[in-house]
Length: 375
Ligand SMILES: Cc1ncc(COP(=O)(O)O)c(C=O)c1O
Image 1 (tube, rainbow, N blue to C red):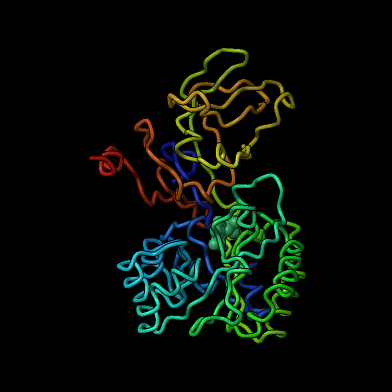
Image 2 (image 1 turned 180 degrees about the vertical axis):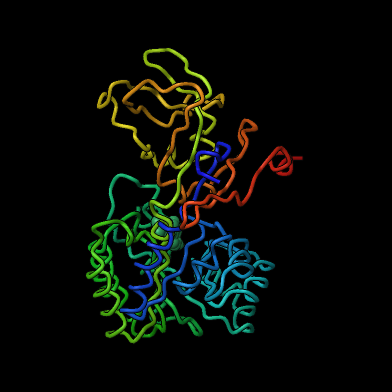
């Protein structure tokens, strides 16, 4: 089926673009000997996990459910990090994960009898207290008051018995320079632990597949860690795997006049692309310009009741009409993993555009998907 024949709203994932990203990531693995893991929190379209596992080492999870998904659908390594695990979760996780990172000494010790018995490789997440981003404080795990990672002052002088790994995640959509700076700071402040560790996990937030990313510096940084400390190096990007590799197709259902024409869409920022409101950011729109750049400027909004459920103002060469399809770009990441049925809004279908351009509807949702989450 052609993309234009898909029912809207629909997330359409572009297999060719995914594979292009995966080739870049595979190249980094091959040249440096590091291990790259898909952070499923960003993208969990398990239909293409077999494709992903052809190119990279495995997946990482934010808890038991993502870990189970990787175990069922992905080949390769299965890592997990969560600020707190229940005993029942830890028991199940030890049966399916090969690497577990803990967020506190208390959690590490609470679950010690379970992970020691299972023989899983265990790491501790540190907080390097080295912020490299400004603006988005909610995406900065090094911000004052952060709950993510153990502070240097709270670590014992040596890695606790049985702990093999150091984990830190501090970046968000960043290039390799902030990573190199962070690594230098970690070496200075946590160098003794690096000397004792078998592996170090550099978290996510590396925009490796973004055009212009400094891959050379990334590889130099990875090689430096491997050569200096004799550690396995892990990276767990989410965005980089599916960056610019998906679209949200939506239809114009009505046009309301206020201070400007407002297009009522069958897609919603609040339900289908919550990061637009949370980050906040303005998603790219195919053939859409900045306000005032093209002939007509319209506000793109949803059919929910939320006054602020507005995607943004965009300009067009001609006035859009009811029934027109609009295409939001870069909609594979942090979209379908975060969506919801607020207002009883239907969830977008999930479709895959194969390399030959043919589109396949992989999953459709309906009323039952709304009802089954309520009681
Ligand atoms: C611990 C951890 N690892 C990996 C990621 C993936 O980050 P990104 O999708 O920005 O690469 C995140 C994102 O929040 C994270 O918290």
